[in-house]
Image (tube, rainbow, N blue to C red; front, top):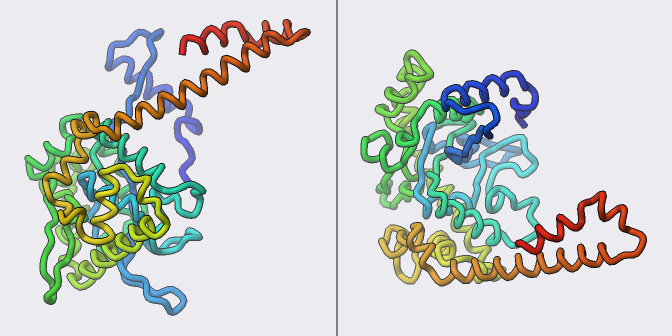
Length: 345
């Protein structure tokens, strides 16, 4: 795990903040806020391999940076398939949001929260590749470490997925036929193009095209059979992961967009509609979320829980103030002020 540079290198952090203040023309007394400008997940990929006599199927089908719209991103997050690694979980699905080995509650709780957050904030579903890009290029974590350097050199407009797609900086990956069967490559979403590399990575490298070869941007050019096996490996892992939600009944706790995704992952359709159906994809928009009854019910339930919590806090503080012999402690702990703040809630 990375040591936090803002803690280990306080001088660099101070200079970075001071530079931001000068750029923004901010007084020293004003708080210097650094809002989150992007959420980029990382994925560990591996080429075909073998471990203790057991074949490990490839996952190295991604190029350095991918973008997925929310339906495809949710499929990835439900499954969270990982490549061969030193971790104790090994290759395969690590459970929803990589928390399978550690989560004691139903995964739908975290997935519902994550999906609502992504819809409301409208962050782009970008991800970076670690490990291998195709069976030819071993990258380890080099790309992941480059992402902050790249993202901070891009404007908010340039980080917008719609802008990148419209200007051919991202290309869609489409399903295709291979040896008589359909390969669901569209689940990989979009990937960066040569135009992206030349335009954006030149802000880091003198010769970006020398760093990112054409077959790195299109891994299927390295070995099409490996690419197909990798995509099918991912799709099959998604199907297996999704069916668990039906087997144990927690599908009932999934919000409607998540339920649609789980149905498509497990059975290929939702009420007879594919994941590409406009009525399904509209469920992942901000307008749909805000105007949906299930989201209003969610807000009402959260409000009820908050009301009960603050009522409990107020009762406890009032009882503390009424305790004989605790006047000094109540003054030291500012219980009266806390009680007034709690009542305002």
